[in-house]
Amino acid sequence: MRYLSEFYRAISVRLVAIPGTISFLLASLVYMRDRLPYLSGLPSIKTVEELPIWGVVAIALAILAFWAIVGLTANAVQLRAQVEDLGAAWDRSGRDLISIREAIELIIANLSDQWGAGHDESELRRKAAGRIRQIGKENQVPIWGIELVDIDGEQLFQDHPMQVPPQAWHRLMVNCEAVFEKASTLDEPVLHTIEDPAFALMSDEPQQYGDLRVKAASIRAVFPKPR
Image (tube, rainbow, N blue to C red; front, side, top):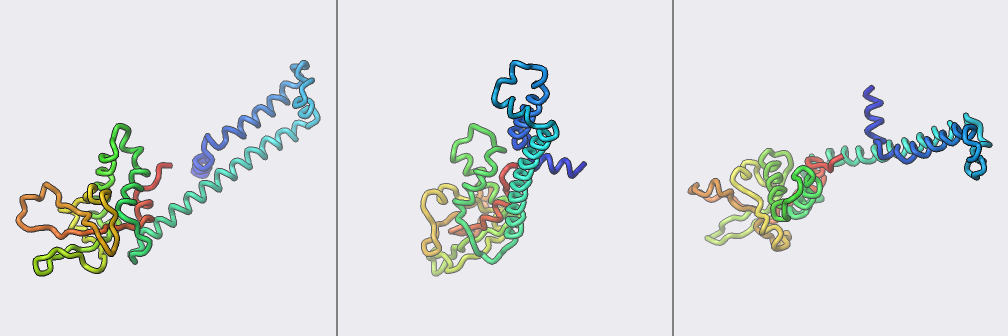
């Protein structure tokens, strides 16, 4: 039963609708050709009349089989892409990173169906940034950034990116305004974090990070498109 369920999910109603309709019409012509003689003058009916019943059944089954193969192939390609994303999501080498801006846009594209209609662009960005903070806090996905440090009273960025520690996200948030206001690069990083207002009364200052980046495969694996 499970195999039939997976087969149905792979081909879905949309994929069998067209060939199913064609097969139904073809079988109906065969069934009605002897009962409605006035239709026999149509070219399509004459063609059908020349086919034996088993030939019509074979054609109908061939159409359904071809469409099922198309559906199963499309499903296999989608599943392979998801498996590859899951495998690549554990890569902590820092390769193939995308900007936090691209990550936010990717999350919005994949999760906007869950948030419903009526949200403006800034609200969607805020929600997506909140999900980034969530996966950073839970250490599900490494989020890379350039640490802002105090050197002789001057705030300077380090010369290399590092993974933002998961515990840092308890006090830090992604600053959407800064992320979308100016492009950030390794040579000219932009500060992308801001302290959560809930911790504003604490005496110490949290460590801040600029030029936040994350692996695209990790975002796709954690926040996949709806199926």
